[in-house]
Image (tube, rainbow, N blue to C red):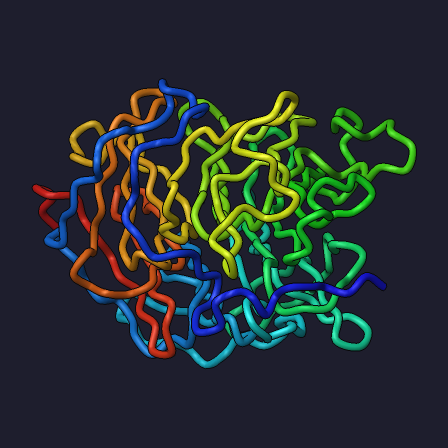
Length: 393
């Protein structure tokens, strides 16, 4: 068993923390057509409603068709939150989780056919032998107060020691596939090892089988589920409803949070190329040769000082909404909500919302009416609803 090294160098007082700073202009090598170069505008005055409080380090929220919500709490609980904000008792039947450090119960999403099958998907840190753990994804049927038919759909192997860099988000491409993001478990070199699942974006069929057209499906000794590799700790994942393009965001170390549009078989560089620094020395890691290398993909968008990006969601299809054609990301370290204005795939400007709230934003989702929902990551976490300026409810 390989042992995770160096995690004690991470900042121990936060979870999934990166260096706290505002965005700066992009570094050389970033696609100019993709990256906003201006200093982000800030706004703390968007209409905001508190829907629920008393959530313990909530990690993800799913919007149910009846107007209620499912919320995961990192210690290992799944809650219902009705429209009146009264948080339910824990839903029974949740898988056992490794609730240490950044581990625990993570993402929750509804199946594409939820209306007919009541199926949900959960990602979590799954405990293994000894003190090991790994990212896993399970599916289950949601009942009024319990999950049934729980099945583990995916396991990151091998399981490793250490409490950090599990990822993890789940996204569907609408073409019969599910993408699962995860971290390299703070063992940097594993992100480049195609025989290991750490630091890889995974693509599977919805029945759990391996797609025959995955880029490494025919490679002997390679993990056939891998879609792309060279990732650090992917906590943002969403499909653009306009185009079907997959967007992914990940934490750099001390600087270098990035957005990628991951393509089949491509290498996104970690730890060989990075815009971040070693936490201990504020210099590049020993493996890092610079910010670019032939055969490796530079970030589509990069923050040279890390906001600590987390959940990601698109707001599109609402032409009368001032936030139409936006990509939202939670910011943990900067304690605000990032709004990237899009022109097609091009990022044209950046705005920071909830700047006066002073809370780590863990997840963000967009409702059918264009409302934006966020979770604050705290002992007493909140579920909030935001509306664009000028929207009257």
